[in-house]
Image (cartoon, rainbow, N blue to C red; front, side, top):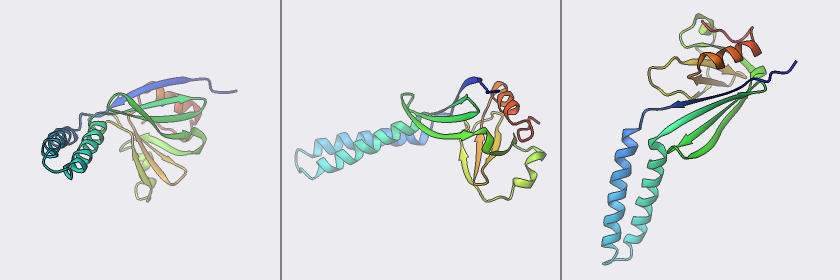
Length: 162
């Protein structure tokens, strides 16, 4: 029997105000560098650097994660500036060691494990779900009940809802 469940969940982080402020500062510095460039061509390089920094700050200002679950596979995409999409990771349910809500007693044996942390949550006040994957990664998601139920039905002995 194959799992034909298809779910998509969008989790938005709060606006990164440091990136927003830095974007404005870099933009202003780029404009001033262009004006000063009339007197010295060396400022063209400074204008290009400040413009590039402003662009990268713009991408980091609004970050969203999209979780897609289909065919026993969880895919995470990172959406930057509400327009640019980048595949963050793909995870097979069969390779998940354990999953439980943050603070659950089921995770007690895994707390001191040295794993790479992958935080795909809003970092806000949402309900965070922790998954240990292949003994090398600790995933933090902000999944809704439908996704948690789909994961639980795919791996009932490894995914806990309490």
